Amino acid sequence: MAAAPQSVALGRPRLHLRSTTSTNDRARGLAIAGAPHGTLVTAAEQTAGRGRQGRSWAAPAGSSLLMSLVLRDAPSPLPLLAAVAVCDVAGPQARVKWPNDIVIEARGAMGIARSTLRKLAGILVEGRPQEGWAVLGIGLNVALRLEDLPPDLQETAATLGLSPEMIEPTLTSLLAALERRLATPAGTTLDAWRELDALRGREVHWAERNRQEQGRAEGIDGTGRLIVVGVSGEQTVLEAGEVHLSSGGGTTLQRR
Image 1 (cartoon, helix red, strand yellow):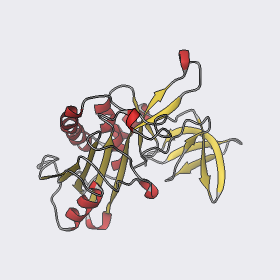
Image 2: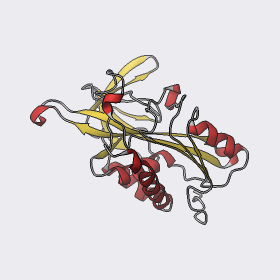
Image 3: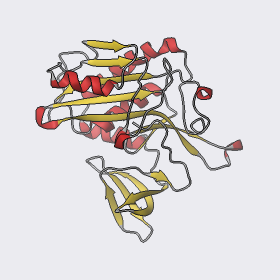
Image 4: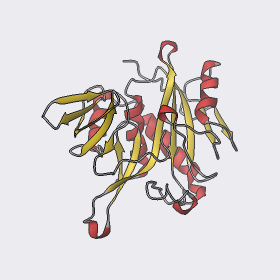
C-alpha cells in the first residue's frame, strides 16, 4: 500500500473561493490538470454541494468548513482515515456512522428516551485510482446555527457551536490531523475507527436488491466493510450503501 507523500504539507497550494458550486468539483478539475499532492480548495459557500449518491449538502454561507484536498497515492482506507481525523478535531463526543458520517449522539430528556445521531460532518472521496489521485471532500459544521436550517433539518443536524472566526483555526487543526493519520499504519487507523463506531451493537436496516434488510451492526472488517448479523444469525458484509438505525436514529441531513 503506497503512503501519501509527506514532503509537501497539506493545504499548499490553496484556492479559497467566496462561493462555488462544489469544492470537490473544483479540486477534481485541478487534480486532472496535474495539481500536486496537498492542493486545497476551500469555500465560504457552496451552491451545489453534494454528497454520496447525488445527495445535496446544505450549509448557510460562512457557517461551515467546506474543503477538498487533492491527494496523490493516498492509502486505500481514505474515508475511514478522514473520519478518524475529523473526530480528532471535533472532540470526544464525535463518533463515526458508517460509511461516511461524523455524528454526535443526542439523548432525550433525562437520557431515558431513545437516542438519535445528529450529523456533524460528512466525507466524500472521489478520484481516479488508475491515475493515482483522489479528492477528499469534508464538510464540518463549525459555526452552524441550527435555527438557520429549515425546520425539518434542525432535529438531525449537529454543530461545534463555535464562532465563524474559528473556521480557519479548525481547518488548520484538521489538516494537521490528516497529516498525522496519513502517516499512520492502516491497522492503527482501523483500530481507532472501531473505537469511534456509532453503530456497533445497534439494530440497523438497509436496502438491498429493492428489499429492506435488518440486522445488528458488528463493526468493520480489515478492509472497512460493515459487518452485520441478521435476525437469523447469518453474517452479511456491506461494502457500500446507506445504513440507518432501526430505532429511527439514522439521518440523511447534509449527506456527503
